[in-house]
Amino acid sequence: MTHKDEPGVGFLGLGPDDDQEHLQQVTVPDVGPKSGTVALVGRPNAGKSTLMNQLLKEKLAIVSDKPQTTRHRLVGILSEAQGQIVFYDTPGVHRPQHQMNRNMVKAAQEALNDADVVCLLVDVSQKPGGGDAFMLEWVAQVTSPKIVVLNKVDLVDKKDLLPRIAMYAEKGFDTIIPISALRNDGCERVLEEIWPHLSDGEAIYDPELLSIHPERFLVAERIREKVLLQTRDELPFSIAVVIEGWEERSAGLIAIYASILTERDGQKKIVIGAKGRGIKSIGTAARHDLEAYLGCRVFLDLKVRVEKDWRENRRILSDLDRAPYEVER
Image (cartoon, rainbow, N blue to C red; front, side):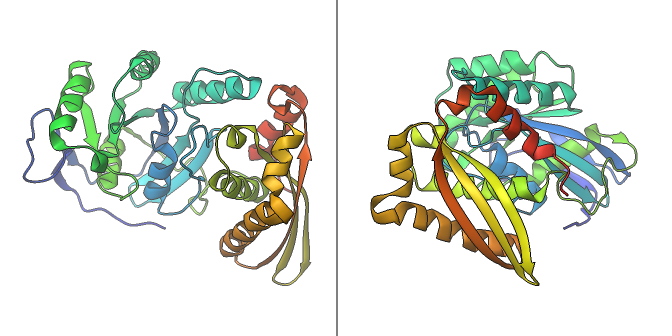
């Protein structure tokens, strides 16, 4: 989905009646085409995936209220009249306790190093702490243009927000944009600030593409999203989804065979639920979502299997890390 923005002048801020101190006036030039890459980085649950979905105007990344929902560098492609922006949605930066988590932080670091522009997302509904200080040091490693995006402003009072704006301004960030990604409030301002930082050039990918990832990986992610939405505590972190089989049975019908991995027998029982109600609920929600996504009827066969300590198993992790980039046959 594409659209053309008219060139003009605007303020990166809260609204026409708010205090504009520390907010920057920007001009959106009518030039192009431009292209480049943008890394969305931040702590877990900062809203990176929600923001990317809003900017793409499509649901590409799965979202949940569980930290560490994103496990890989997810590539989203926005092609418009001005050019093309390739977004890197990255795992939240955290202290890793398993090999899987170390891989996640590594993916975020690589995206940060590769990107032409860095957007640091901050959840302003949480009080600043050591994690925020670490992120400031982390993004200071690169020389790329940096934009601070203060997310979830709808959850805080203006009097509490202005000191956060001042704090990041004092850290040397020229551009600070308050938004609510969930409400799609202020997201267009992020795009307006990104475009001038990109170089003139042709599109990196085919403009018709939304992402480079294979359909099977995105399907597995959507199934995992439904597991995340219906589980709690430690269980969401111990779950993975693997596509075991994929058959186009007839025109308008796809059969998908998937396994939900757990680390313990007790976790498997929780996913299945009493009398199978848990797995049935997950499967029903996933099937409805997949039918809307794939545009056809879906037969979904879900099984749950135990892979003890799979988050430390390099073979399983290697398979999961390859899935986003495998060429479909």
